[in-house]
Image: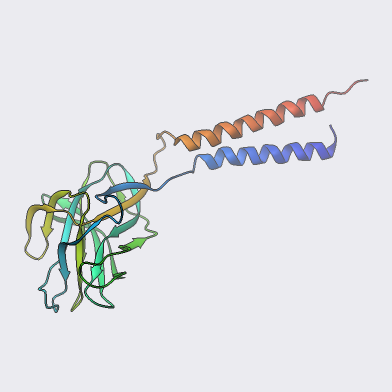
Length: 227
């Protein structure tokens, strides 16, 4: 086998190996929790007022309870909140659920602008993405809280699914069953050395191993010489 063909075979082996290694890192963003239905996921003119202490609607912060679908690293949180006028901003906070009350704060994100204004209107959600270092446990109980500062006010719309569940009026510390505000959390499975790869990962790995085997067989055949 010539030097040129050896280099060609080596390149193929390296590419195939990269496929095998890369397959192990393939991860898809999965729905971790939420209650969005078809379409935009919210019900216009039906939901909860979220307002700051100086707003004309009274001070209201709302926290929606949910259960994590698995062990996930959270990378995005969305809540369907419209602003009461231009320039309204809100905060989202993620808490553990401690017996029906806010427990440990896991993360808080402020100065999130509502994408539309006016009660009864909603489009893209108030959203925070690119999150790191927040891991939820399978079956764990949590709260997603929405709040506003000062004169800011908005409307957290109910889910189109019509789901109901524990809604915590944070300012009054009162837990009750009401339709849930529309929200969603996205994440990737938490790192686990014993986890089973996704089907797409298996396909990439098998393809890579097959390519390695084919290149090695070709190399052995090409190396045969006759006296």
